[in-house]
Length: 258
Length: 74
Image 1 (cartoon, chains in turn cyan, red):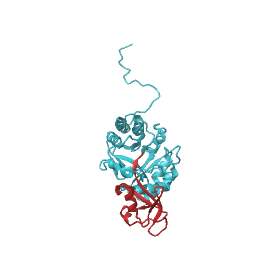
Image 2: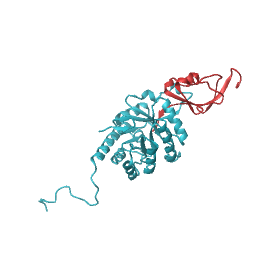
Image 3: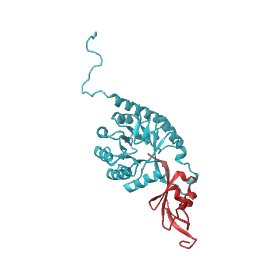
Image 4: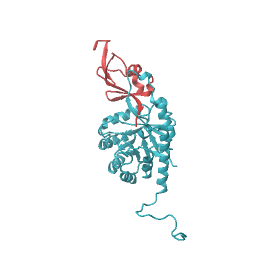
């Protein structure tokens, strides 16, 4: 299968995984390996002033030759904080990649699209490869692309909800109009949700909770890998047209029964 | 204690009011809280402090310093 290309990055897998909500770092890495992903997203937070020295650091568990780290601005509620977070991530030596999230409020966790567009424009000008998290809104997706986003990441459903692809028609419209890669980010609950997204023609899927909170996360990671490949192959194959009425698959002629 | 020559000054470090020795650098402050400088990034008064200049960056009374690192997230 052809690789996923975003900006200067090339990824053999079309899945991007999160690094949150796992039992521990070993389970997290086992899930990454089982999913086939080559790109994982991480957050930035204050170090624990009292206990940082005794704690394990996420970076100690990541083979950077194998996994590209995509820092995110999760937890930012305005453009200014998202810019600070992206610049801190770059200072950490993570390159120019950023998954830009500007969240509107704590309750819905829905993206603040106007602020996201503003921040995209500034970060793109500073040389960042901006992967912009947004609503399933074709107008916002177009605006992000025009603002310089390297990839546009519409939600399937609210973050952490596992509700699947709530508005497949909008996702299809976004894909149809896009000149940059489209990644469904958020809302994926199970393997079929990934397949549905990929069958719509999106270039990839980012998920976290759907694997981390499965009863058996590693097994679910494996399921997600196959779901992603199946959806991509089905999209490329081109599905049959839907029709209202039944149509027999065996010939009507030559029947020898009643 | 505060304000005296050779005494301590007060900064806000990761949201906590913290007394540090007058003349301290960012480098001294980060070494107190982390093992490995390559795992963190630092902001002082909302401006990035490049890693290469930690030891040459003195802190002043009232500075707001953030020391951040990577954590799991989606």
